[in-house]
Amino acid sequence: MSELLSALDELAAIDLDELSPDGLLDLVAGLVTATNRMTAAVTRAVRAADRREAYDRDGAVSMKAWLRGSCRMDPAEATATVSTGRRLEQLPATAAAFADGAISAAHARVITKAMTPRRIAQAAEAGIDLDVTDSILADLARATAPNETGRGVAQWVAGVDPDGALDDAADTRRRFTMAPGLDGREHLRGEMDSVGGEYLHTALAALMNGDRPAGDPRGHAERQADALVALAKGALDGGTLPDVRGERPHVRVTIDWMALCAERGAPGVTGGRLAWAGPITPETARRLACDAGVARIITGPDGLPLDVGRAQRTASAAIRRAVELRDEHCVFAGCDALPEWCDVHHVVHWAHGGPTSCDNGALLCERHHTCCHEGGFTIRRDPGTGRWHTYRPDGTEVLSRAGP
Image: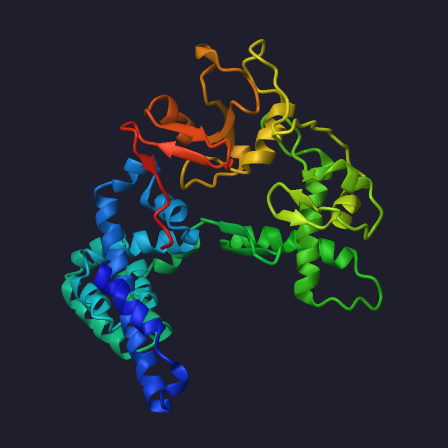
């Protein structure tokens, strides 16, 4: 690994401006092949770790969860990497082409996604040799772009599984992810089955068509996004959503009281913060506060609010609000479970004299709450940095494996 890192350092030191056009193109082609090989190596290593359940050493529930938490990998990318690694074990020709750098991860995923256990079984019943199919599709991937490879794969599916279209139609899985960007915007991605998509489209269309003033300059995409926000806001305002941890779901804004009361543009005023999306300007916080309830949290010099001592075992709504504000998500190493999925864990157990307080509380999702009580893991908060540290039963620390 050290030799590989040294080679990457040498690569980064190349002065691209000194290369001729042919030299640049040769470099790009070589880097693409090297990238394919590296991605294949990652996929192979992920599969080995997945097979041996190595992720359990760090308290993760799956290899996908470990990749997301410890390597900060995109959820969709983590899922695809694990799935591709599993199915490539049955496709040696495709795996070899991937390992050689002759095909990309996109090629490999197009092929492996179609190789479901059911279709492989149907091919065997029809006398279709999987190794022959694997070789044909690998050769096709070597010679074509992923979308063209996909057409060849679709022909194989149609021959092996004529009812494949029905299987696809019966796939009612829905996926939707939201991620805050560095610019303060929210990035959405997802997919729906046809029926789910129709429900969403019909609801958005009703809101879009019911509120379009004359001369509206917004395009279709902007109006559709506004309708989606209106749909969510209407559900929250309507009070029909289920309670979350004993409270009615609501948008939570945190801002210093003096900043909330300050005049627009006042110097030295810090902004507010949304529980999920992160920092916002003071003016945005004031706008949201126009028709909102205000809950005051008084903190001491160390920034830790509220303490109900030992008289109360369960964290009060105020303590929970303060812990959520401080921790933002599950504090177990590598986990980013949302606050509404978490319990307030007593770092020093209540039965052992631990108080019910913000200082002794920590957000833990159900999985990692169990890890700490039944699995022997422990968590500690560094009072100097405010960072949480997770330790295995043997006392070694669980660290993020991403980055240099």
